[in-house]
Amino acid sequence: MIIVNTETIPGIEIEKALGVVTGNTVLAKHIGKDIVGGLRGIVGGKMTEYEEMFQEAREIAEQEMVQKAEKLGADAIINVRYSSSSIMSGSSEVLAYGTAVTLK
Image (cartoon, rainbow, N blue to C red; front, top):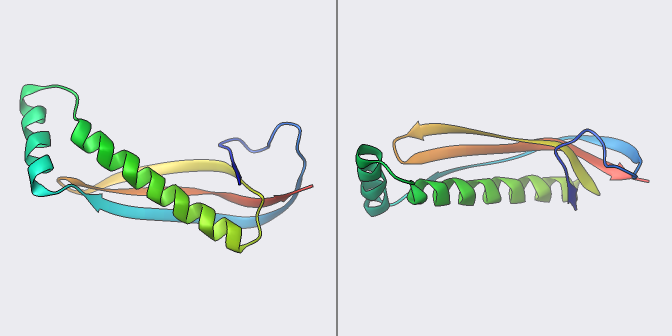
């Protein structure tokens, strides 16, 4: 599966747009990592606990988006975007979306 954040794939012609595909997830860190992350917010420093949470959430959302595209018979997903929001302290929602397409 080719995944790009552009409207086209250089050197490859798009045959058909199959529609928008999405994937989303909401994740939260356990209380211990949330406390450590909160302390880092007070004293400063890289908040690796939250970086790990966002990375995991992006991977899960992207995987779900790819699975939906595969069910449609897509060869690629173009114009991929990610959106995130905080649901509550220590949790995040990540949405991945793009257009599933077949290629010539």
